[in-house]
Length: 118
Image 1 (cartoon, rainbow, N blue to C red):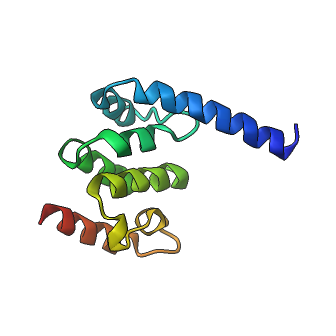
Image 2: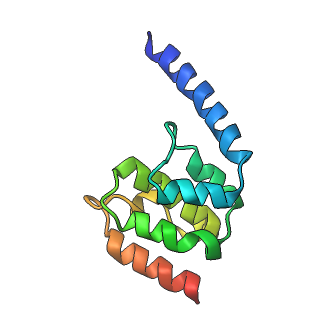
């Protein structure tokens, strides 16, 4: 399989996964995330990010970002949190909230937590 074929397959399967998540209630997505079921193509995060409210998902997303979960899980979780909190225009980027090796993640998370609580 060539890289182009792999990429096409990935995108097709990701689209299917996103459709499945979008068809389910946010409460079920949150239950999956609590159970460590994130899907195969990271599509649970954008589905959640476009539909969840900060009050229902915020604390769970912060807990994942503070956890030792794999980087890509934290990255996509951060993108969902940024979307839900509406702080992209404020300069927040997923890597700032997830890349412990290159970013001051703890400081950024604390600043975001204070911002969304205000």
